[in-house]
Image (cartoon, rainbow, N blue to C red; front, side, top):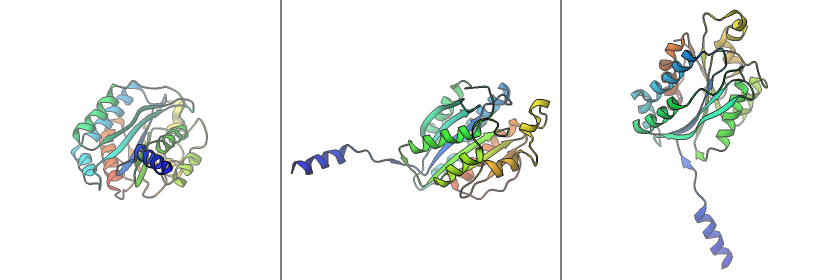
Length: 237
């Protein structure tokens, strides 16, 4: 009898995982190739996207009508910061709270570029999220190749093996300084490099942005496709 009572008490204290349609980690490049004005355009782009009525409609259109979002900034392999831990976005008010917190956060780093470290941090967040979701997505935005830490394809492969989809937003630097040229314009172009090395998993895709000013519209389109799980062409903005 005592054993039964103890089991009932323990089951009563266990909290069921909160259900959402998707867990999404935004992984954003803040390496030295991204200057402060470009960083501010990235932040403004995230805010514009999450407050866009089309994105909010996509969220409401899910079976549960909510997604959980976290935001990570990375530079070098030891420069990774979870700027915003998990937050549930389900309506205009919660989207505004998320973007207000993002806007208030200072830039985390300047340094090299370790996309792999950003993906690895995102995977740890996924494992510890406490949410129940049928879809798990990592959304990497950056303007250059991986030049720090472990091979990015290995981090991507680990994520895909765990059932996570990794999508990319490749920001094309048309006028790089000489010492960053190979970093931001690899052979075949950055978008193709992202396809080969960063993205993977069911329905994965890359969106190409030709200027930081177009980041908001690109992120809006990307979020709509991710939330609604729509097929996406690799077309530039």
